Length: 358
Image (cartoon, rainbow, N blue to C red):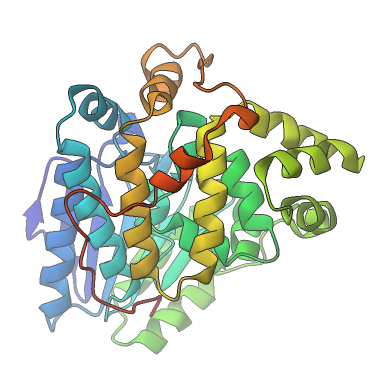
């Protein structure tokens, strides 16, 4: 039975299962502001509905759950100097916090591409399912931005310095590595997801959700991060981004050298600010506090030339040749990084809390 349908978010309830499908498949279900609001409203309604036992979020099409936020719109907001991006982030971060403390089982199918904002609507959930097709990542340094949607909270709490590696390089990871760093809970082959959906419609408790998912879960194919911990921890524990790159180049492992080259191609301002954000997030106590910090930083990036240029290079002109300003890590002004953490001009998000995965 369908009780609501939006163009870009499909909402339906089957027995005790409330099912939200992000529905922009041509854009790999990238989130725009209307989608964030529609999902937030649905979660509010379902949380109060006693007939709903479990909520499931997935993506339309076969390419992925969600490729991130609508970065073309963010770029336009930065160019025009309006408050569109800020309003989007405010609502999105409130949604992320609500997901983390949702009082009913919240199941996310992290099948296919799950980037940026896609991580925000999935990895804070209570039951996070990855498949053999999963590609999970926070690629923000590629576009002159900084990990948000609670990404710095999640990555700062990954084993050792693996989160730092993923944040600075923007490297997407598969199912096993997503499980290893704490971005997912279960591996289920994609061909079994329809049967899992049917099983979830018959659950009536949190323990029944766990049992249902357990019937379909398997051991994920091997990942790589655990085997690379030695050089990751040794190199990324350095105090500065410059020293991290130096250690990666000097280490001797070909994968470490490759990581150094990858970081060298990212926005230097983004890399330095991301490192600072991760280190600060590690010291903060709750997701809400980190989201407040991320909102400050996100607002600050709207004034950087790199955000407009990075999105241009990746999704507008697609020449993949951004001209970063400044062009090197050594040229980044420490005051610019520090200013990114100053209070937002429109005040705090007032998220309440503390919250966390239920």
